[in-house]
Image (cartoon, rainbow, N blue to C red):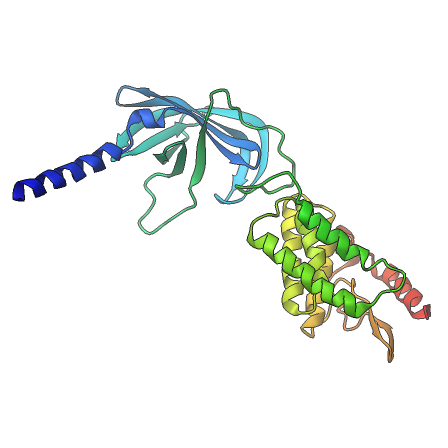
Length: 315
């Protein structure tokens, strides 16, 4: 019985050893993608007790490990200067192709055709989002068609959401009717916000246009939380290169401030009720200059004043 137990323990130990990654498991071409574009291409070939290879990347980019932007300057072809395999983890030292004194060290782990790359020798207790790689056929190249002034995240897509566009189009359609039943519109607005929340929770929105359309849907909400979420969505849209979303970013903040009893600061909000005339109050006209409003696509105060007069003349 004791002998049998020893055999079982020995098999378990052997099984654990057998599943540890070997050098051959790291061989091949690995890519990290942002949407449909390759950001990094890592090519590894076993050699002796380690590997040789290359690490291709944009010449310039900015990142906090989760958001990437400013990809420019073509492609830099760095090399694997040193490597070692320890306990199933491949430790790589990547040398800058332009400056040999500039080196970065990474720890690479693999599971089938997936791999994670993290900075090596992180201080205890410090964790970072790993770079997620996938093994692909040879010949992969780093993308060079990055859009300027856009932030990218893993899982991005350049394909807009057809569902989000349908929700947005309906949001606009009910507001363009000749005779509007606002009670009915309010009820369907609630449904559209619910549909949009599901898309957000599922990670189904990717493009700047997706998030801009979602911002308009929540701008037609009825609570401070709706307007604050709308502002957040508009900021995401701008970060993804949606320049036209800058106006809704300003308008959502104005509406949020208005809803919590504070003064709007850009002047995008005009309101009235059956007992009072049209107004922009409360409105802090001093905080933001007209020059800054222009950067946000918001008319200057002189144009706003003419717009207010026009509203007051309407029946």
